[in-house]
Length: 520
Image (cartoon, rainbow, N blue to C red):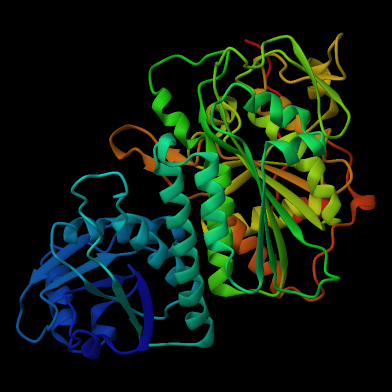
């Protein structure tokens, strides 16, 4: 899908040779303040007759009207232009058009357009019109190819927002594509090839390690998960070099479990098909790199994807087995369905070699995070207040929101083991936190954050499908970091103790970490 922006009044915009046009109308904009074009007169009449109430999501449609060139025209109210209101308004407008054959669409913003609002509108339109086709015998591919944005005011910021939205959509849709693919069409080898295809530009590199190389590195935890699968593991290392070599990179680590049966601790059969989404973290890393290839920001980024299946073969790891991670720490595997943290811990250790300014892992890690936050916000855990603040702000700016969770040391008590340095699970209570505490053991030498996307990476039910999150959050974070002067450097030595939030972070909008709930 291609986006372009033009400076046009509504009167001129409706003369464009388009199949359809969507007009985004804020509730505070009165028609008598605009002009006398056919659409404005029509809206004024509808408001006067009580047929169009200026509240968020209200929609009116026209077809083949005199003075309006596009066959289809939809006016939708965006309320106060809040992110959620714009998103729902665009969805409502597309619902009115999705049964039509729209190839070229105009998107006109009434009043003063803003960069965040425009970015939200375009990404929401792409999300609403997306359809998965790869494994369908008779796919109905997306007809919509071109979106021409028009507004009375166009600035460099708006042009940049359109460019950012173009890159974001390309990344989100690539993440959706790979997460939506069935596991037999998205094996570790398939992911490796996808990474190579993305990393063809001169600023990119991609290295793929197989079982022998991973064994040589001593990634015993990663290998333990993979040993029950007939599909060979792949450890994917992607690099984007957009800044001077001396600049420390940001490392993104994506959990790449291409299918998760739970292993010997096998999952229940209902909805197990959704475990193809267990590589949503890996898909988001691929999506971010796809977006970077469009934007080319001045920053260095490394992507690490430990990719494998988790299967219950006769050679599979068993509950009670003890393995040695790349860090040298031994792990008692009490539950083989807690495999994501095992592949991630070795990847986190590997990340140290890049001397990173920050490491962010992204994983569909725990059902407990779904219970805590549902499908609205991604769980954010971090040992670094400055990094947590940056990610929180990026989530708020992009609409791909997260919520900071606690990391008090007391939560690690349940991970103690008599037979190894650490167990891979604790009890049921605070499961998302104890999983993060496990990962924190392997991330002590750099600023680290963990994004638990178990509730936000895909939708279930009739609308089943990948969301592409948190590509938007990560891309916003990276582009803000690239634009910052001086570049952000995490002051590890000034971190607040685990389980606390600094007053500066409170003032800047990061909420205090919640206490563990009491038992009933």
